[in-house]
Length: 116
Image (cartoon, rainbow, N blue to C red):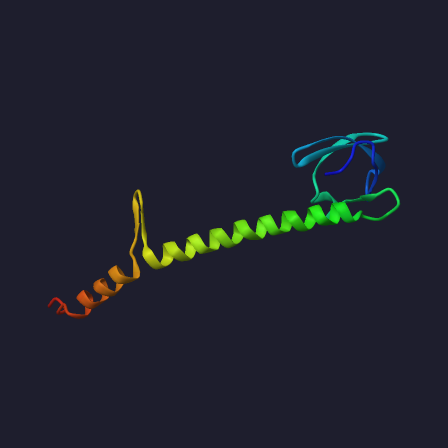
């Protein structure tokens, strides 16, 4: 977490100071405006410390957030894979499992075409 009154620099707004930081949001007061940023994501693209660097604490926070995002993405991917291989029923739509799909295909092959 970043401390209050830390001086930062933004590409567009120039120099400012952190005036509030709660949860994942921080407010920075610049000469002409006060802006809210997502912490620590803003330090990847928009902000640096006033001296043009990013501290090791902020870099560690960025890495931690990346790990958390990757874990969520991995879980979502795993859930989607599970859904694709085992099937689910969504109200109004049905997704057949692989077993059901194979059974359906075998029934299709064993039916005789209708005569016209």
